[in-house]
View 1 (cartoon, rainbow, N blue to C red):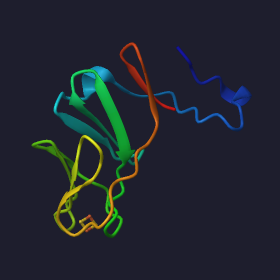
View 2 (cartoon, protein in one colour):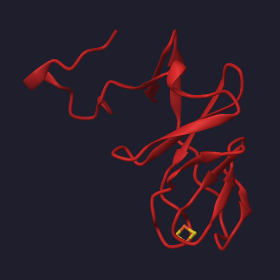
View 3 (tube, rainbow, N blue to C red):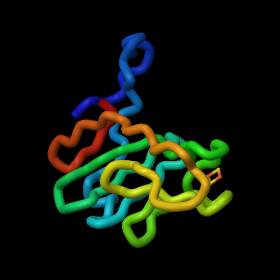
View 4 (cartoon, helix red, strand yellow):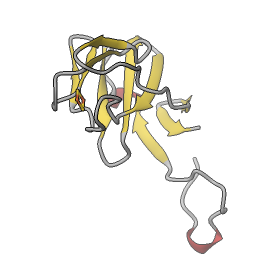
Length: 110
Ligand code: FES
């Protein structure tokens, strides 16, 4: 497991340690990490995806995941958990995918 090591932190390391545990992400749903501006989803068991949590409409942070859709609270934008594509509301473009690594039960930013 990688741990923060204080002043020896590498300059280009994404660092920040683990984003989540796999058990934090419901199957068929997802979890928004507001402080990291990332939403992690698990469309099917063991298949994890991550996207920016910044709505492509006007930049609100998406609020949560319900019924397989990532929801933006500002104007009702919805995105599919499988690929981040628009499923409803005013957004014109999909949520950009963010690379993650899954090792054991730990999800980290790639
Ligand atoms: Fe998300 Fe408008 S900012 S729907």
